[in-house]
Structures are given as structure tokens and as C-alpha cells.
Length: 70
Image 1 (cartoon, one colour):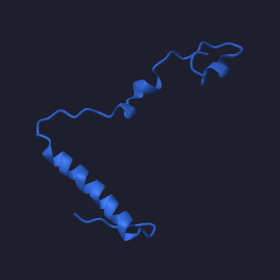
Image 2 (cartoon, helix red, strand yellow):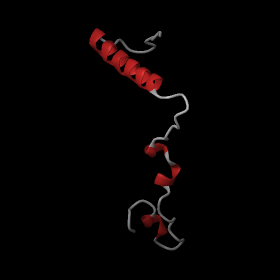
Image 3 (cartoon, one colour):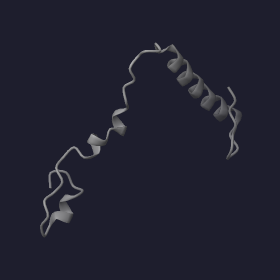
Image 4 (spheres, helix red, strand yellow):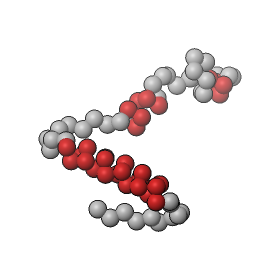
């Protein structure tokens, strides 16, 4: 595995911490069975963003586009 710093000047401690995270993720991915189904992250689910109905058009509809329960 080769890691290259393309921007910035990390300290040896910062580089070691980043490398530890990358290696831990690689080890976790390698430990999964090859046929195991992958579960997508919840934060990337589009239904999370559009979970509620879009406000109906009207004079104050712009104020209901952001605030929950509006």
C-alpha cells in the first residue's frame, strides 16, 4: 500500500494517525466474507433528505421549505 501526501505538510504523528485509520478500514474490509451483502450508509440515502412532503404552493410556501413542521 502506498500513500502519498499531495497537499499540506503533516507531522509524523498526523501521518501515523491517518495511516492507522486507512489500515484499519482495509483490514475490516478484508475480514468481510466475499459474498456478504453490503449495507449502504444511512446518511447517503436519498429518502432521508426527502422524508416529508413538499409544501403546497401558496403565499407563504417559501417559509415552509426549510423549517420542520411548517
